[in-house]
Image (cartoon, rainbow, N blue to C red; front, side):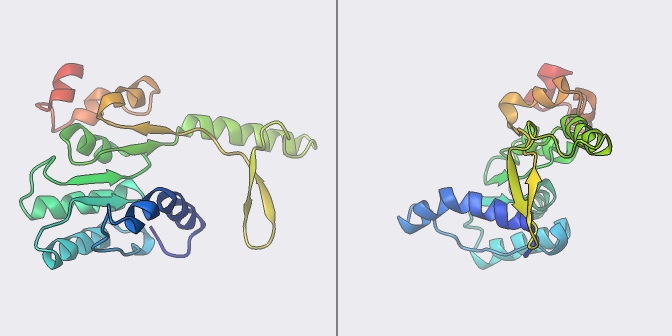
Length: 195
């Protein structure tokens, strides 16, 4: 992620909650670690290529905080002749069509879907309540975010973890179609079943 951003800090806190005990017990060894300025996929690819070179290709997993940086890791693996499934690229969020294709092909393990329709509906409800002079609806607020000046009421919405097993969820929610996801990868097992 982009160092210093609120979101990056939150993602890092969450991932470290699970990874740090594995690192401390020597079950996981971190061989490379770096922030990706402005979430730039090209910088992520360069970092992943450097990491692979530095470690003689002996890297088992790449973890990215969004689909763009995860896609950079996939591009690095492709450029080094790695086949889908030989190395695991996990992580990502945004459920971009490129990431969903990588999931279908076995390059990427998962992506997090933040349903824009749900976000838009909730945002509209909050704005309508404020415009009507009622303030932020207390029944929608379920947390807060400190913006370094104050604690701001927040509405945290549910997300979906998208994997190869539930890739169809993005289709049933109207985010993407199978034709869009499978464009150029029609011969994958997932696409053969769903086109």
